[in-house]
Amino acid sequence: MLNATISLLVPIWIIFICNNAYATTIKDWEQSGFWYEHRLLFIGVLVVLLILSYKSVWDSYKKWFRLHRETPFSSNKPPLTTLQASYLYSQQEPLCFTAWLVQACRSGALTLHCHKGPYPWSISKNMLRTSASSLDQQLLDILFRDGNELGIHPVSSKPNPKFENAFRNIIGHIKEDTADLIQPKPISIPAWILLLALLMEMPFLNGLGALVYTIPAFGLVAFSAVILFALCKSLPVLLGGKNVLLWAAITIFLSIGVIVHWGFLGASFTGPYFILYFYPEVVAAIGVLVVTAPSLPKDMNLLMQILGYRKYLAQKSYPTKEHELEWTLGLNLHADIFDNDPDYQDDQLPQWLIADESEPKKVIQRLHLELPGSIKSAIYGESEGPKRRSTLQKTKDRL
Image (cartoon, rainbow, N blue to C red):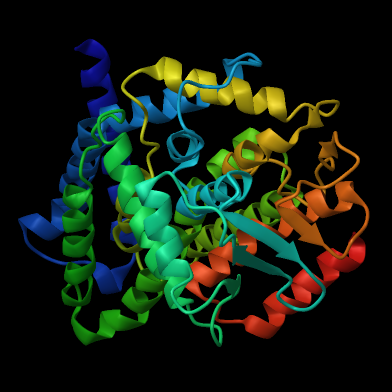
């Protein structure tokens, strides 16, 4: 109780000091009336209460980081399907679809092809093999209703309807299948309501003359929220191993954010910093953190087993085996061009993987680097098709 009281009073005290330090120094924003004189303090109290109300979310982040840091290696597969483990690990849904596709290839239902060209990956249906799973058969019927071969790429930079429909079906199945395993998450609606109220109030603080201040405030909130959302979604990749490109992008955007905030804090012509920029961004950050909070399993041992097995497969000296490819892809291993190449154990490619390249290790490396991205583009489409094709070509040239 004492800690909670101190946690509540200290921010309020800081907010009161900031109110006197910033709000009263800008003549254009001085308003009369009880609300305007104490607005910063009241909103500060609401923000603190909002933070305290999401204690379970902050605890889940704390557990998540601790498990990634402290879980030891484990050579035992988790007592879950690859799809369940992939979803519980990161909730990156395209990776689940990638794991299913490789799983279907290994079962003999599909053959995966890798050829030269801007869109090198394609799949073909094995007409002599029927799937034992009703879900697999349903997905195969969606993918191959117009033929027995299908390229893994968008249609004119737009989502491929076949992949999009199959993806929706399998993700719906996975969410239903794991519903009893995952802890319920709190809703983020209170944070978005408070943010909406703050943003709607801005234009009315000083009439139309305030638009020169409030428009940048809206843009800053949107910029920060998008960057934080991308960072939170990338946390499984960052915690699971190095990713130089991702770290570089995060460093650049965080540096830009710090410089912009420093400029807004020190420039009087931008309006009061805490009223316009600080509080809305804090509330937006709370909403994003709640939305992207990891969905932890009810039995934390499940996550420990997934992380332990992932660490085991990610060892530099560990030789990757054919039956583990669906796991390495589903758990997003060897997906960084600066990471160590997967040390594929066999001298020949699996029977279900046909490629022009004669070196198995290079094909397996391309499988991890390119296939998840190709599947993601087929599901969601791509707005910059030529740029994407250029990136793929550079990757293949490197290999």
